[in-house]
Amino acid sequence: MNKKKIKLEQKWLIAVAVVVVLSATTGISDTTLQKTFAENYSVGTISTPSVSNATTFKAVDPNQSTNKEFWINTVHLDGMTNVHPGVKCDTCPQNTPLHPAEQPPANSTIPTGGGFRITEPNKVGAWDFRSFTFAPDQIVVNQGDKVTLHFIGVQGAHHVITVDGLGTFTLQRGQIQAISFVANSPGTINYYCHVHMPNMVGQILVLPKAAA
Image (cartoon, rainbow, N blue to C red; front, top):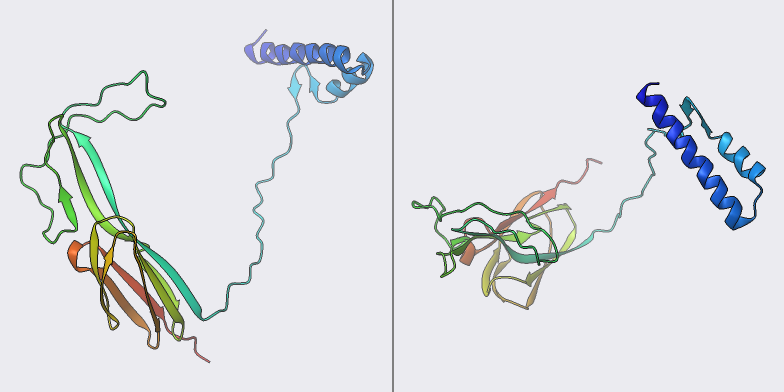
């Protein structure tokens, strides 16, 4: 008897056992339950539900409003590590990937400007690499849209932000500064933080009006 047939017969025995339990607990007759299972199981073949690979699409009408509003967070990404390898924790509520021993680079290649930061190892060997960014850092609008940008001070003690053609302002942690404008011309409008260059930059892409 081959392995496939043995597995099928094992599934059949399990189905029979289920029939007995259901019959005892629900009061449904053995004959009715056996007939139901027999329609779905047979030694040698197991019926499986049909699965459709067809993808269904739903039509959605896009928003035609020319008033566009965006919320832009000031955040940073942190890569935390240690000069010592990670140690397994058997009392922690969950497992985390263990990092290898890592030393800060001897000759840093990161550009100057404040957008990147490497901290020196502390007394237990922990150190981290930080990168500041906007989220989102790319926005798409249409020519003629009325656009409002809300800049949110989430991470970083403070920022000095410029939006091309609109001015410069200071943003502290916990503050929100709003700037509004009409995107008259197609092209790009940059926004960036002077304190965290060169990587804390964003771009507004203004698409031209469709030809009449």
